[in-house]
Image (tube, rainbow, N blue to C red; front, side, top):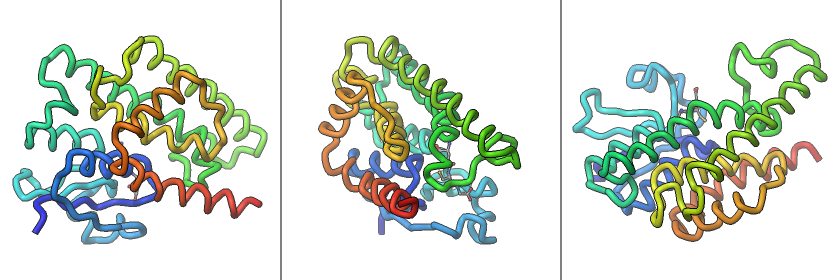
Length: 230
Ligand SMILES: N[C@@H](CCC(=O)N[C@@H](CS)C(=O)NCC(=O)O)C(=O)O
């Protein structure tokens, strides 16, 4: 039996991140599709945050860990996958900074800019989830899109600044997190700037099938929702 069991929702880029990683790291894992099951008593008993991806591993204090970046960090630590997560404190600080920036700042703008097009529910307390009119929601979406563009520029100016990957010469867990997140840009046909396209292609190329296979599930979902709007 595999030591790692991932509980996933396949159209999600948060999930795609962990799914790409376990493949790229050639770990022994199984996947359980929990679409529509994250609020069942059984799931909530293990994960009161009702989030995916969630990984089960017997050695964990509570048997599970969620948060895509925490899953990747744990697996790198556990299996000494230093090429994905450098151990030198200064290099690791850059990878950690990029991941926190993606999850804490880039993704909230990305979700406000794309979730409407993806038919995903927006988060409570946001304009998109309120009973504001369509014009107000459109304005909020455009503001999020502009802010998201600025956050992406930070990767060109700072995290990458001439390097191929955030991790330097090798794809890091921060690169996996960013590249997977970018997949949602297809939902809004975002005009990807040249430098970002070059970076994104380099990550996809370096990861090969480990990236392409989970990406297909996200692409399939985006094609499906686009089809609904025709
Ligand atoms: N920051 C988290 C986000 C996780 C998340 O938002 N998961 C969503 C799918 S994209 C989920 O599982 N939602 C199901 C639910 O809330 O019931 C991560 O990176 O793992």
